[in-house]
Each structure stands twice: as C-alpha cells, then as structure tokens.
Amino acid sequence: MMRNDSGGMALNRPVMLHLLNRIHEFSEFGILSVLDLVPRYIPADDEEGFQIMNLLDPVLRTANAGAVVATIRAFLSIGDAIGKRPGDDRDDDSPSVDDLKRQVCIRIKAPLVTLLASGSNELTYVLLKYVDQLIDLCPGIFDDEYRQFYVRYSDPTHIKHSKVRILAKLANPDTAPDIVAELGELVADVDDTMGRLAVRSMGAIALHDSGGQGAVESIARRLVEMLDLQGIPHVSSEAATALAGLVRCHPDIITVVSAPLPRALRYITEPMGKASVIFLLGEYGESITEAPYALER
Image 1: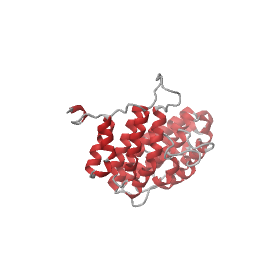
Image 2: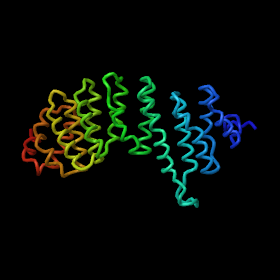
Image 3: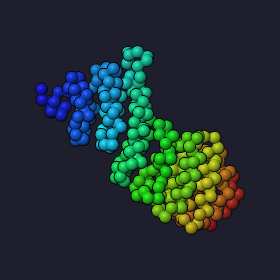
Image 4: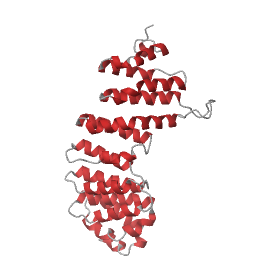
C-alpha cells in the first residue's frame, strides 16, 4: 500500500524489521534511507522499541558519520515514543522518557567522541552542534570527556568557538578547576571573539555554581585580575560584565570584587563594561569607600 505521509510505503512491524535485519547489506545511501524511516515508525511496545535499538546498535560503530547521526535521531525518537509519561498506567518499572533519553545519550557518547577526534573540520563542527544539543538534553553525560573539547592550535576559528561554549557546560566540582584553567589560557588569544567567549564561559560556570565549593570566589578573583588588563580592553569589559551578573546572584562576593572597581572605571572604554562597573559602584557603594568619588569624575 503506497502512502505519501510515510515515504511511499506502509511502515509496519514486518517491513521495519525486514529492513533493519538487512541494513548491513545496503550501501551507505541505502542505510541512510532506512534510518530516515525509523523516526516515522512508532513501536507497538517497549519490547519492540528495544529490539529496534539493538538492531541499530552496530550502525553506531561504523565510520559513516551520517549513519551515526541518523541512528542517534532514531534512538531519541524511539525513546520519546515508548517512554513512560506522567499519567500513564504502565508498570512502575517502565522507564520514563527522560530515563530512556539519558540511556540513549550514554549509549551514543563513545561513537560521537570517536568521530569528533577523527573527522574533518566540517564534520567536527556539525558533530559539536549535536553534542551541544545532547548536553542540554542530558546534562552531565559528557562531563568526563571534557578534555576532548580543549581547543587545539590547529582548529579553525568556528570550531574553537564551539568548543569554548561547550566547555562551560561540562563543568562540575571535579572538572571545573581544569576547565577554568584552560579557559584562562584563552583569554588573551589574538582572536578577540575567542577572548570574550572564554571570559563569558568562566562567568557562566560561576553563575550556575557548577564548579563546587569555593569555585565562585575563585573565578571571581580571576575575573578581578582581568579587570586590570588595560592592554586588552575587550577582556576588561567582558570581565566587568561577568562580575556584574555574578554579584547579582552571589552578593557576598562583593568584598572580592570591590577594590579594583574605582580605577577600572577610568580605563574601561566599552559601553557594556563601563555600565557594569557603574552598576556595581552604585548598587554596592556602601561597601566601596571610593565609589562616590569615582562616580563624580
């Protein structure tokens, strides 16, 4: 039976299992065509969903990046279709949608990391975008692979920027010290955008308090040091902006931040950075002796 809404064929259990059992016999184009059908098929129950996943598992170990990505999409689609939702009358032991998606992310982590290390620049950039989305979907999954996202000297600019954004999301009490140290090395990069992103990522780690005990104050001290980098104005400005946001969430660190603010107001020239310093001086002026005089100038 021909059906336009399902790709010109009736997607039922016999057809789907027939294709998946023979997927290794197809060309790369054929594999991708079959994988494109999987998200359109809704398994009848959990058992069938897991059966399809097991049949697709060998595809994750291939060198075909397109097939790996299509398999990831298929896995997530199956997890969304068979996962237990609030109000379902299924057994308590049935996995929820979130549980299944987390299991999928664990299952696909190793193939993705392998492809990241061995692919071309164009492929690496696309895979980094997938990783970024998967981190948002399942926080913490890639944390132990944080070193794979360190910036390399030979990386193109767009890949460097993507890695710096991702590093901030991989911070936890165990990884944050190494990640913050790595970001600190990138602050003075010749690429202004890279320096800005590195400062913002450090601020994001402190803002979300993902670095564990003492990380907020430690990062705040690093940002305070950056305020005095007069030769790199964009870094000083970004540091001031990050500190303003940080103090809003953690007012107790104003004692760490307050000392350099009056002099920073004299040499920070970018509007956003200057506005951030003025905000801090005005909002917390009672704890900064020189605040009134700095604002009068």
